[in-house]
Amino acid sequence: MSTTAEGGPGLAQERRLITEIPGPRSRELFARKQAAVPPGIGTTLPVFVTQAGGGVVVDADGNSLIDFGSGIAVTSVGNAAPRVVDRVRRQVGEFTHTCFMVTPYESYVDVCEKLNALTPGDHEKRTFLVNSGAEAVENAVKVARSATGRQAVVVFDHGYHGRTLLTMTLTAKNMPYKQGFGPFAPEVYRVPLAYPFRWPTGPENCAEEAAAQAIDMISKQVGAENVAAVVIEPIAGEGGFIVPARGFLPRILEFCKANGIVFIADEVQTGFARTGALFACEDEGIVPDIITTAKGIAGGLPLAAVTGRAELLDAVHVGGLGGTYGGNPLACEAALGVLETIEADGLVAKAARIGEIMLPRLRGLQERFAIIGDVRGRGAMTAIELVVPGTKDPHPTAAGEIAKRCHAEGLVVLTAGTYGNVLRFLPPLVMPEHLLEEGLTILEKAVSEL
Image (cartoon, rainbow, N blue to C red; front, side, top):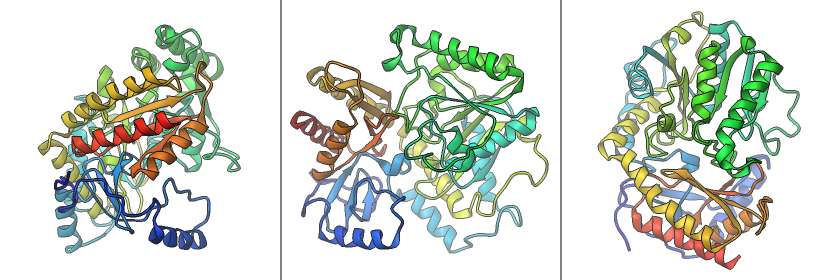
């Protein structure tokens, strides 16, 4: 079946395999990559992309692959989405950079105004723009420390927040993110996350017990009066798409409010319609003091944002925030195109529809195959956790093998999880349903063969 992409210009929305995956041209390019780029820059699937749009990526050998990765939740509105392309093309002919801190421009303010209006809560807000999710999280912590006069930061098991020194410290998983890169930043403390599948006394007790443990550890080991901020992903991303047990996030927020602690929601991976709401916080009515966004914000251009209560962000002295490229005009125009696309094309509803298709099929696989221990997620952010059948022991080898089989059949999938045993699925929100169904059939075949 071939239809035109909602994203890329006229790109056929079909899986098409001309060569093996990767093909000869991609292998040639990958050899050049190995000679020029350090091995620390890993590669999930060594196919070199020449076009992408809608639900497909096309490689240098002419193969068209179904995309269940979206550049790790970046191209949610589709690759080369028309409104993004049009705005960026127009801007690049006018000027490419001035540095907003030297001579500002309107599009930066436009993006900030829209984020102030769209993020949860009707309180007065401020936003500033940076380059990456890690930079946004790091700046959010700076703001919290400046506003509260406190130093300690609390994070959670299975959390991922970035690769800078501070955000690497905030991240839970050692390999590959932290191994060999210490010493780490001080005054960072880790507490339990409500992980229903792995909670010792069962999912029904998870929210209450995990919140009680976390609050007890903060109170006794750190002192609530010393905590500047709690930083948490509403759905843990790299940790394995863990959806905290319902009631956990509200309890943590309540504790923060009672103790003058800034609640920072890291929505870098979950934001901009990905979970079937504009922001994942909305599912339980969470209104964070500060929210960090990136990835899906600008359709593939580097942009991130810190949005929060005006009194917090206004507490930082002049010159204390910023960066040369933060809020680059091309990226700002791209972000405005993304927000237009989400609204005009109803992508919040489309993300919810993707979840309605994927989750029942994934649960059907779980019923048939004991290797799938858990199915979880919301909207277009779903995952399966692989275990040794009959146990809850993580099975990372199975996750890797299933991913390899999917790749060979022309389906881009990603692995994740603290134990490396999770397959995560992040299709573009504009993906045609026939490609979504075909991708799930490829996954089913890979699981059944294993």
